Length: 253
Image 1 (tube, rainbow, N blue to C red):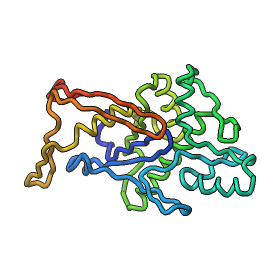
Image 2 (image 1 turned 90 degrees about the vertical axis):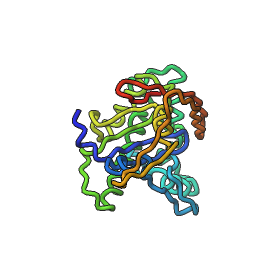
Image 3 (image 1 turned 180 degrees about the vertical axis):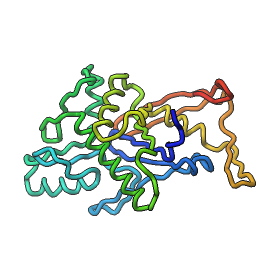
Image 4 (image 1 turned 60 degrees about the vertical axis):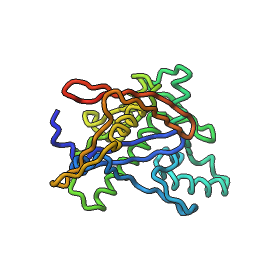
């Protein structure tokens, strides 16, 4: 695989109640692997700013995308106030619907239906692809506004999923990513504890800045053990990790 095109890595995370993305440029990563950028989401109805937005999607009756996150919540409040909810699709916390489908043994390798808050059904693959597509477009807009001369083909995408997900579930998410416009060959589906472990391993035990201004870290040594606790909006997952020295002095967990 040609590594030269990976000028930026973008990660999309769907939690039980919130979703968002983060990204890191290759040149920034080489200087400081913890130099990670996120977007702060705000809403007009609440004086808050968060690094993740509510996992909410609003569609019209023709199943056309209208809004995501705080904007979707705000618009739906107005819809409820006018008693017009039957004219809209509103999905909230839809990752838990997929989680429940896996728990109940549904064959998610094929598409299946999930219900919105009012009981109206829609394709699960469509909902996830709409959400992924929105976050993809949102990131590309942010990059353009920063005047970053970057082509989308130079981006590597990562989507995190719970560790209990099966291979068919990971393939389901990959198909959603493809439907959202991502290139399968430039997408990784990564278990959430694995992603957290990689981040933990980069946390500076010791930090050095050389004469060339390049930051280097003394990472966890072989044999170091630690616990990763993922306390989400709907579930809590705990995993234990141990760093072991692999081939070429690379560390594995």
